[in-house]
Length: 553
Image: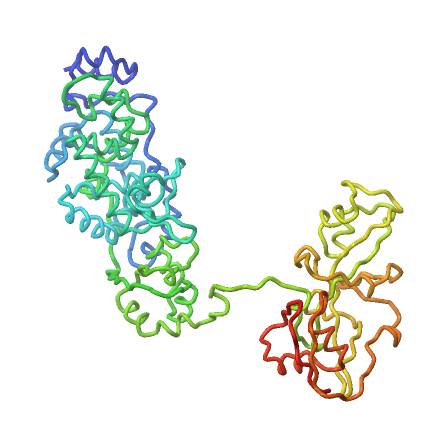
């Protein structure tokens, strides 16, 4: 017995292919030796139990003992562990050795709180796993794989990039048909990911005809398992035969799987109290065919956002894109029924905030217009000039005029720095208001409305907008006050303002390059609305050559 133990310890330490092929070790005989120092425990062992206590399900539906880790450890012999493992009703062989024992003791003595939390979460997740395993006629003990994969955290992301309860990598997920987009990651969906993981495990078992190898391949990939099998030579082998040639993290994976099965069955014997369900959570699934945000559901139905997220972790942005294709929404049963009855109210709730625009026309100079408390306005491109003063940088100048540094550099063909006294040309936009009177619509330069920026960065406006630099000569003085610009230029002379015209009959005008509705309206002494009404226009956009009916004043 002791010779066999020593041989196995040497195998674990040296990982020698020659030694492995020369010796055949019975794993049941190995019960006391310390595992290889290179053994890496699964990431689930590192799960933050305090964070788990904040889980929606644990906090709302289960009663757990937060002092679990302080309870005394139970002493168990190797013989008792062997007896208990042998009584587990499993199809997959679960022997004892030093690596398995250490994994069991880690759960039983050092991670009591983790086990208690997972027992509580299992009340919700285990039926999902068992249903999928039964569907494909797979061993039920595989339901504990997510325990060592993710500690039953559906949004878990490993250091390697694996995601979800079953820790599925992106390439594997793609091959299994799981959707991965900016809005939806089906690897986080308890139902979809479980079905995919079970199908993948079935494929692996069909390949190796051995569950220990299939489980190892699930963790490190078939390529690593095949490489290890080639190193041990021909013949029928299992996980323990190729143990030294597997990646370090995989060496602890199958033992942890055995330990998870053990601790879930014998937790009471180790003074671990299972979380007690306050009340069962019964869910139902609704197929959503409209675009809806979790906030809309939460506000209208008064369901906490955390609850909706916990039941639907696959939606990465709290958004169900049902307008693209039908998507499932999981809710407690009664609330699922209520959702169907109130779907219209939910989707229409703050629809302007959560809806997605399907058509957006780019802005033009003529379309940058609207109304506010000061009246009707439009934004006109202007060219300003600035003389660089001592201590000024391009960044400060750009910030002052609401433009980018790159636009100043490009317009003036300068480098990253400018000398004092340099005269810079700056193109931006000025908001102009139309003061309406009974007789005319007179354009004035008023102090900009502080509810909206007075200067709009030129970078955000299409370059095709006509340049009206003539309306803002270089001599105009601009003063920066409370992030708005006040034009100190004296009022425009009569020659600069369109002359007031006598009443005339309706006529036709052909749009010329550089014209917009506001210029045409001012030139004819009427309002933009009058032109739009006369021509049935829905927007302010015009095309060169377009014929407009100019109504009487």
